[in-house]
Image 1 (tube, rainbow, N blue to C red):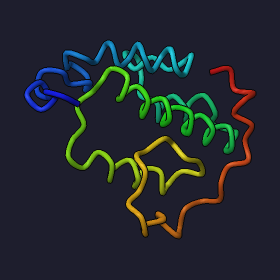
Image 2: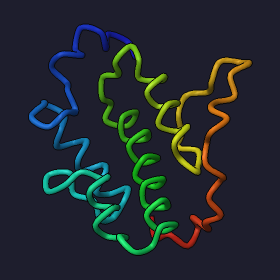
Image 3: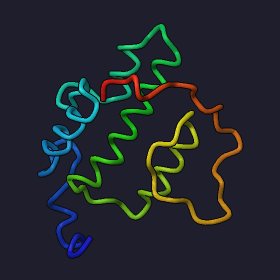
Image 4: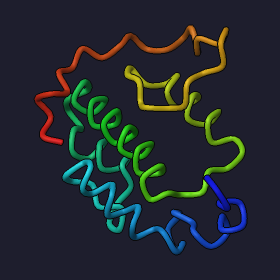
Length: 125
């Protein structure tokens, strides 16, 4: 973003940062349920779907997608390794979470779990 470098320190989306509440509002709007003032999405998904493995993954996928879109929407400053972190996370997930396109020739991890067969159109948000 233009001029984002100078502002990066001030506009943090981390808890306690200037932009945290905007980010939390975006996450709540996007996920319909996850209030980052009260919890984090890993805890939320684990607690809400303790028994249902695929629903927990769907929750994590949805939350991760929301996180990626909220970081862009707020916008939150991205660290230099933001894209790499996103790809690493995506490699652990059975879904695409909206990371930046990978450099050509890198297809991600071969140990990635099988893609989740989940109808996201039936998820309210």
